[in-house]
Amino acid sequence: NQSKKKKTQEDPKQLKTSKMYKLIVALCLTAAAAFQAPVTSTRASTSMKAAEDLPGVIAPTGFFDPLSLSSGLSPARLKYYREAELKHGRVAMLAALGFLVGENFHPLFGGDIDVPSYIAFQATPLENFWPIVIAAVGWFEYINIEKFNVPGEGFWTLKPEYENGDLGFDPLGLKPTDAAELSELQTKELQNGRLAMLGIAGMVAQELTTGGKLF
Image: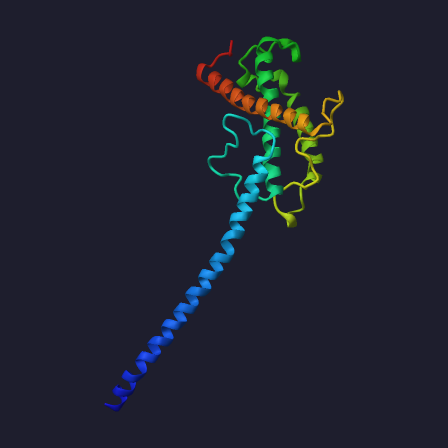
């Protein structure tokens, strides 16, 4: 009986102590959450701001990123994505032009390639052409390695001093020296590249569907 009485008397103290521990833990977790949230928010906000300031943001859509792919990215990683967009756009512009011209005017490699562009790469006269293309692409990719950060500083990130799309090739001196004019020219290139990516995808889809040339 005395043991039960003693236990009954101690229970309120234990209950009070337990509640205090829970309250302390809850306060600590709340404080930690309150401390961490602004950091994440600030990082995401900074990343979004950096993306919004890049060339290529135009009316009427403005900054268009419905899936928030640029949210939370470091500047170096964001630079990598912009480089990928530029490179794909440039290749697509060449591909779209080649698709149209190659089907109607093909004087090289014997001039007897008279098939839709989507299967022209299999033509026998082009067997010696593709090794040259692969070597050229490999060279450009090789010289671009120095533009990447070392793995310890982040995978697939570009150095801050590298300017997107700058291959050091401007024989006609077309690159503007004025910052506003340069941004406008970069936006035009991006827009043409984006259109070309959609265009070449449509051309290939049409020929795959019809089995014939575009025109």
